[in-house]
Image 1 (tube, rainbow, N blue to C red):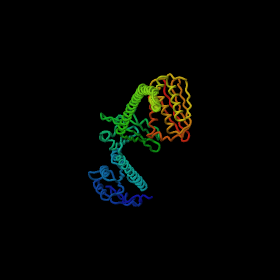
Image 2 (image 1 turned 45 degrees about the vertical axis):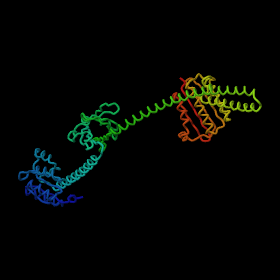
Image 3 (image 1 turned 180 degrees about the vertical axis):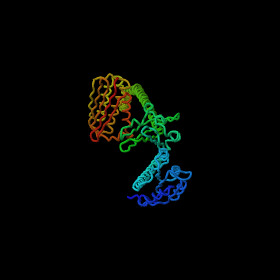
Image 4 (image 1 turned 120 degrees about the vertical axis):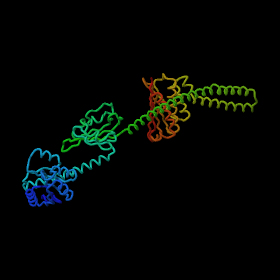
Length: 485
């Protein structure tokens, strides 16, 4: 691409020496670069820049009038986006230092050669284009970051803050002037969330190339409130060299509150659960006591009274006629059936054998009852022959066996049942298996499974466990393990 193809409008020459102006115009013509106009004062240069919008300005430093070239360049740079090349016949250092502060793109010593002039214009236009593209990128970056709801900070490699987005200024409750230019660790106190320890030079902890840091911290600016935040720190890399850092801070105050509320709710739920378990244990104790009391009253009062009535009927029967004797015989048989029923009910409420003889005898009696009533093949094994166990723990184990056998009769359709009860050194272990039809796991969640819940609660009461496994067509197994302290 030729020099002229990079020029859309033309060049403005600011030169008060006619010979120098003529030479410049001649060289530009050879380069096929159009000249918009030539002016001799700084004031005219500012005015013509606004009117003609030149692509580039060739500006002599020493000009006629009150405004020299450096002053004119400074005003043009502040108002218009036009690149400027200074022209000077002198290389005085003071003049060059002044020129450097005006935002120019370089300078040429007069007289200027054609090739040198063309190269300088080319380089200047390229540099100006790159600066425009960079300015656009920066604008896009700033607008994008400004629109992010989280706090965003950028720093140089030393941790000096050079940008904070509006969300960050709002979080830190400060102005841009109060924080930009300060070291990150000095402007913001950053503490580790786990122990509250102040973290010095946080960005140095993520210094490995291509890596970043992420974690929970708490921050404080001055004497303001401490804010819990998620911090992500990403190195800014250019051609393998780190040139700065981007720090993202997300306020997690609300999330922390939700977490704390969740923990509190969980603790309350655990307390409620414990209270319900205690209530359940208390209700079972009351139930067993009531059963025992009712069982004794039925056995000791009603059954004995029925027995006396039967004896009185037998006595009357011996002194009666045949018809009356037959009637009394039938009545005696009914009373006998009532006595059997009363004793059975009393035993089911609370087997006295459990209190009088012990757990093993009570379990053997219960197994025999199911064998006789349900015609069920039940094999009972236990070790040792007698258990050193009594009281509520013995009652709960007995009730678990009783409930399991009732479930087998009512639901399993089994023909064989194996009951194994062992008292080991530190625990009591119970296993009940049947060859019934089994069930799906979902059945344990049904309303009909409250008996199983009761079994588990009886085991839990003693810090034990009650597990139930079942497979369709292969039967069910109940395994109970209770510590024996």
